[in-house]
Length: 266
Image 1: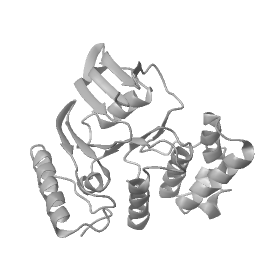
Image 2: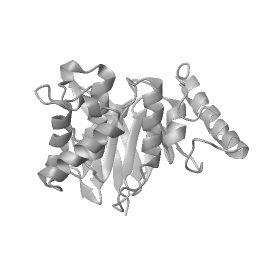
Image 3: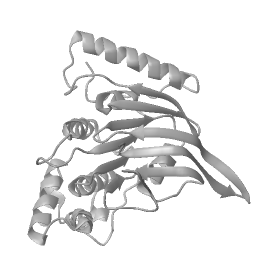
Image 4: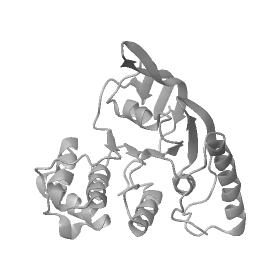
């Protein structure tokens, strides 16, 4: 059974009394343990799709299913990182991460604190654990949000351009960390839906790339490159470059392709 299934999903919002359709008749399957990048220019509906998967919005038509069950709201099987910094301003960095961990009910207080500190170290914020969001830069706040999502150890990770505000070095390190995030401590493999408009980031991370034009899925491309992708051989680089050209052509049908250099720039 697929982990995530979208069946003829459409979504509209009221616009001066008339529905404005954002997504139209989407059909998508994400298998358990698959890393899917959703790629497309701004305004094509990527974030709306992620909100439907998170249960924050519900389809106007069709159904979103996880493990065969219709999504009717948020669940502890999913964690999400938005483009904006969704931290509680009255909590320190550690307390923000702890809050997410405690929502799962999986660990006691001591283990939850150990996990919070471990994931703050992974995003290089150990020394900022006792600082409040107003004391952190935008990139640091985003790293706290990423640490909170990863520490929750949910079956499904939903990420909405999570690295966009980070500097190049941290961005590359977190891309490599996400690439390695296939298993943790022998637990179930993660299913990841990762929204981006960066072609190279998608090619570095994805098992599949779903390319969206406004409201629709225009292409669904497998990325059969070996992992890890930091050091690809000549044949694999040629395969990656062919996929990049395909994606650039898709972007070029609408506008110039935004293509930043990701972790593997070889």
